Image (cartoon, rainbow, N blue to C red; front, side, top):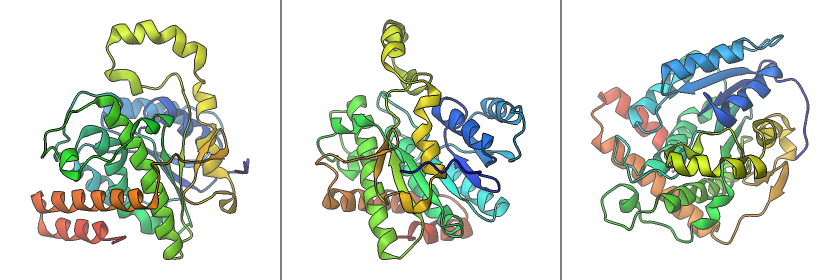
Length: 315
C-alpha cells in the first residue's frame, strides 16, 4: 500500500469509536491533513471532550462534527445514518473502529450478542445505509480487525448470536469470531463490489498490539494492573498503531487491494477460515439478523420502509 502523504482537504471521514484510543488518534492524524471529521459517541460528555481535543489542534482547516451513535441499538444506528444523509452530501472514508473485547455474555437491546452487535453488525447496517454517499466519491470502507481472529475455529449459528439457543459462551471466542466475521465480511463485500462494478474499496486493518486503547476495559482491574508492564514493553504507541489506518485513508485507491487485510502498511494473507463459503454464510447471517430486527421493530411505517430498503442493498 502506497502512502499518499497528500492533503485530505475537503474529505469527509466518519470514525466510529473516536472518543478514545485508536479512533481518536486516527481522527487527529486525519484532521492534521485537513479532513472533516465526524466523531461518533454513546456518551455526550466524552464526545464533547473528543471534539474539543480535535478543535484545539493548531492550523487544521477541516470541520469537526459530533453525532450520537450506539452500536448496541438498531434504532440509534438508523437515526445516526439518517442524520448523516441529511447533513452531508458525500462520505469519503468510513472507518469502522468501535469495538468491545472479552465481555461477559450480554445481548444488545435488540437481542444480538454484544461482540457481534458492536464489532460488526452495527457497522454492517451503517455501510448499507450510507453506501450511496460513499459511492459518490468512490470512497473507501476500513474495518478494524485483529490477529486474535485466528482463535475462532468454527462458525456459531445465527440463533446462538441472537440469544435464541444455549451455547457454551466464551467472551474470548466471541471477540475472536467477531473479528473473523469482519474479515469474512470484507472478503465477501469486495466480491459484491467487483460484481456490481462499484469503485468503492473495502479493506480491513490489523493495527497490532496497541497500548492506550480501551479494549481491555472489561478485564478485571487486578489483571489489567499486573499486565501493564508487559503491555508497555511489547505494544505499539497509538501513533504507530494508527499508521495503517491513515495510510489506507490517504493512499491512492488503485494501491489498495479490495478485500485485503493490511498490517503495518503491508498486505497480509487471511487464515484458512476465510473462505468464500464462510464469507457467504456470514453475509447471510447478517441479513437474517437485520430482517429479524425489522420484523420486531416498533418504528413508524415510513422508518421501517426505509430500513427495509437499505437492508436489501446487497441482496
